[in-house]
Image (cartoon, rainbow, N blue to C red; front, side, top):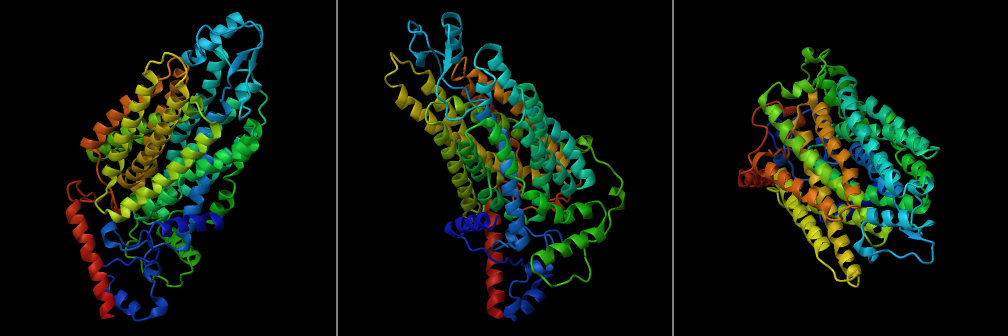
Length: 577
């Protein structure tokens, strides 16, 4: 874990950023800042007195990343949790179908193989071949063990992935409510433990229906991580660290590690066990961590919140104690109140956010998993394609962090709209390349290479749009219904994911079909983002219910000026000290 953290921090430093304590410049803290600057041994004092929820901090009041030890621990836990979330792309491996051929000496296809879809190849082999043989495969899949190559059996293999995504959908509903009612930490701990157990068990399944039922449980646990555990981590770190988290501890690295494990195992049973155990280090660490102070305060449990904050201070090596918490007014009405999805539609502002963000989650999920699950059907080296996709995704997310820091007006709207527009362009290009007529198969290899390269770029851009979806969802819903809000958005995303395996199957009938769907849904998503998506960059999660939390998308210049003014204020105080 230490090596992983050091690697992520080295990438951050290589990007040109210094990780040090941040100083908010507010009237409340000026006196404390002056006293601290006179005492070099206490120079970095902000986190000694201010945790995530004690004094509202905005993005514009910050100068540098305020990273403490407990933040590093949260970053690492999220990365290991993402290893488990990569179970969502495991269908690429366990549904891998090798190329089929006929052992009969007199058999030939009616057309060159490159001009026949998989369905057409299967049809000719079934009718005219006495002995069908599977070619050499880079990964020994479930499809090979249970001989699910053609016809209804091939469609059953698609249903295994669909059942797994159905589990994610159900888990989104169940765990979202449990996380808001019982707390983030215990629900996340339970859900992840169940997922690891059933992930290991799926590697021992004697038949594909039993395997599919185990993957359903694994899918529900994936939802727990994406909804409840992500909310827990987001509430345990500072608002400006959210982009850093998703940039340097991201899906790209998780995909690289997941692919490496599958490559080393080479067999779907051993890979099922090994990939499930990747997230095991999270369990003992999460067991000893406290509940989110934000959740405690929202439930009116002020003493528990203060104890959790004290635990976090000790974890970070801090010794300063708070004599009085200025924000410790109990919210007695929420001690026994249970919130449901219905509360997302009790007022127009929350309803508006739910509809807009939910629409973006649905379209992004459909595009992401549709293109991901279809990547195994593309030409080229199977593992190289997966490795390069993970690496490009990781680098793209680091680039997002650079933009976020160097370009203060690069808000959540731009974070979604720019990559979404490029996604539509990429997959429209793939669709055109696949539709170009060919007199023979002589140029097929060069065209397939171009398709693979453009697809990798498109996949990485979709992952960037996911960052915008998650960040806006966390930052726009009030604490009392945050996991329900994220859970509802995730529910809509899972509906999109349910369609994704069918999209991948469409490619066996007509190759450009999945990309036509991605282009169409991407255009709808882009229009919704351009006209309706709010900007939530830098909001304090405790102040979401208060008016004037969100900045207008047209106020970028004033934001930059305000940030510059605050940085100059910090410099003046240091000179006066």
